[in-house]
Amino acid sequence: MQSIWHILSLLGDSRALLPTASILIGAGLWQMHRWPARWALGLATLGGVVLSSKLAFLGWGVGIAWIDFTGFSGHAAVSAAIWPVVFYMATPGRVPAHWGALAGLLLAAGIAYSRLPLGAHSLSEVFSGWILGALTSTSTLAAAQAQGRIPARWLALALAIGTCVPIAFPQLHTHQLVVTLAKALSGSVKEFDRAALHQP
Image (cartoon, rainbow, N blue to C red; front, side, top):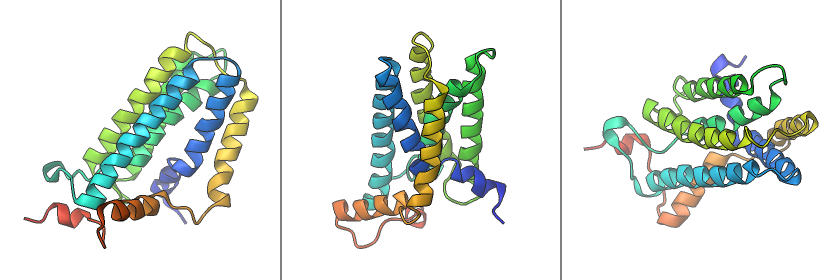
């Protein structure tokens, strides 16, 4: 039986969240909203920053030992960038939408924290990742407030497809892809690990 931490961590799986966001972005652009373009740009920038930090450490050992930092947590960053927008869009009309966004940020915080007991990240990595993601989602929602939301049917479709992707592609592991890319770019036979960060 999976622990609550494993379940929370699954909710931060980029294999599910990125397809969900992609469909919502497409639906928003179809309706001629401008906020999806801002969200897409924010997600692309966020992805580049997170990926660069991971490649720098895994390939070349670039990290910050005194705060135990080996790269931004992708789970924390992606969750905080996507769940607040999803919850905002899902909030019923009679409820202020900012409560939905807040719920999304809290869920993302729980997902980020789950990476600690699972031993996947340090506190500095999950906190900084969550902050980056929260900046991405809040800047998107600032624009969405003035432009309206997308229909519930698109939200349901996005969540359904996002749920199916990890099930359809269980062999796809993004971390292993990043490790392979880091070794290819750096020419290293083996990637750097956390123990190497703290070696004298």
